[in-house]
Image (cartoon, rainbow, N blue to C red; front, side):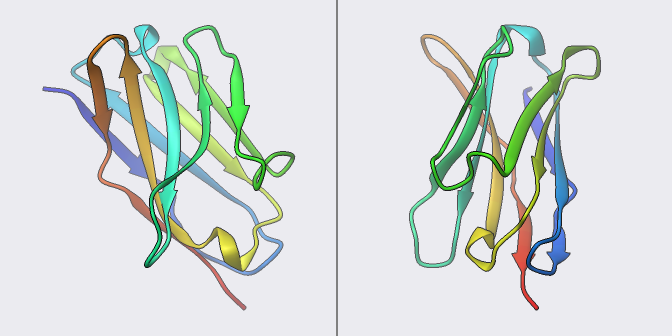
Length: 116
């Protein structure tokens, strides 16, 4: 079955950087649009950004210019490079995979904590 496994989360000070990875299995990775979402305590899950099969990216306004999404189809992996991290970036980060019309999968999430 399809599995998405995130890694790279942790604790970092404000202004620091982290790179999250999401490795997929059980699917033809290059056929899927990939996304990153996050959910902070007491808040709804929100979109961080997406990358299409063709490599086109889209970002939430709150992270634009600080976060970068990339993918390596040879490694079945999508990345989220997070720079200039702020306390409000603290959340559980989830990877998603989408292929129209009905295929949608989630990873299990990885915690990112930004605190001094």
